[in-house]
Length: 111
Length: 109
Image (tube, rainbow over all chains, first blue to last red; front, top):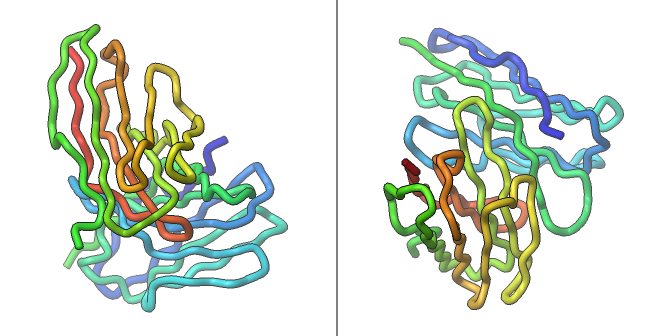
């Protein structure tokens, strides 16, 4: 089942912070975060693995609560370049990296 | 190093016609994926492959077939296109990080 993302959309001013949440009804092995700008392909941001390992972006951080099957993406001091749609992809196990993506969160950063 | 490429970029089909979308990657990845993206639905996995000669079904495989005859190529076929298959199709490759191609916009009339 698709993970649920919240909020669906958020508008920020430059320099403001935002949190995007991703929640699954299934036990998770990992959570992946991608950003997609309008008309472009999704781009990898971060992966969070069961057990706490985190790999990815320098300026964007995330958390993964395995017990609650939730992940949150933290965007601090947002820049105009952060605008886009953010997707979480969840993996429930196995070696296929078969991701189920959420429906996305649209982030608009204004000057 | 081109990464992941997709052809064609855009195509219009009539209902019942067939076509093949080609995905090519030059990163020597074992894993390749086909997704479709529809407004409000996010990315949904159609089929994937964990190596040359292997394919497996994803979330929404009906109406599509795939082949992975060469490691660097992953083909997605529509045997008899339907308007419900109007979408943007993305190919991706990689394991922990999935690298996406630029997408193919398909319109079925």
